[in-house]
Amino acid sequence: MDPDLAILEVEEAMTKCVEYLQHEFAGVRTGKASPALIENIDVHVQAYGGVSKLKSIAVISSPEPRMLMVQPFDPSTTRDIERAIRECKLGLNPAAADRSIRVPIPELSEERRREMVKLIKQLAEEAKVRLRAARKDGMDAAKKMKADNFITEDGQKDFEDEVQQLTNKFTKKVDELAVAKEADLMKV
Image (cartoon, rainbow, N blue to C red; front, side, top):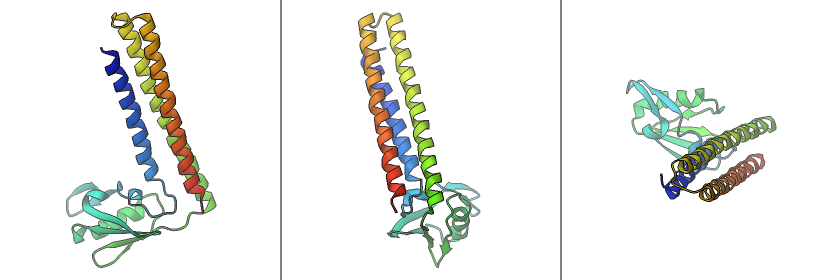
């Protein structure tokens, strides 16, 4: 295995980890209306006889700072969408209109904000665990390349140093994202 290719694989795994964390953070409620908050809700659609993600069966917009508007492609799915939003664990209370659903985003209480901060910290820690797994894969790749005589002992050391630098860089990025999300959440 080529050392440059192995480094790229480790970096790609770590990049995907950070992107996933950003996606997860988008779904954490901060008191502001964001389509990302509800777009991945699973909706049991009777008309289609299955489960669909909300973003695949409706347009989600934010016309006001504390309001989401959901406009189903098929008006017959309005009740199913309304029920799914009400039953998700976000504490939202949608109201169906003619061909759309209005979802007011209530102000977060101090207690709920603290719960969300715990969730943010948990998500960040899970991301760090995935980063450490990618680091371990990189270190194992270095040992394998050394055993297969693709690199020298000095080359292995340099490779491991590069993997560690990547790990430090992405861990710092995860910490920055978590701090920024927490600050956004605690801002009243």
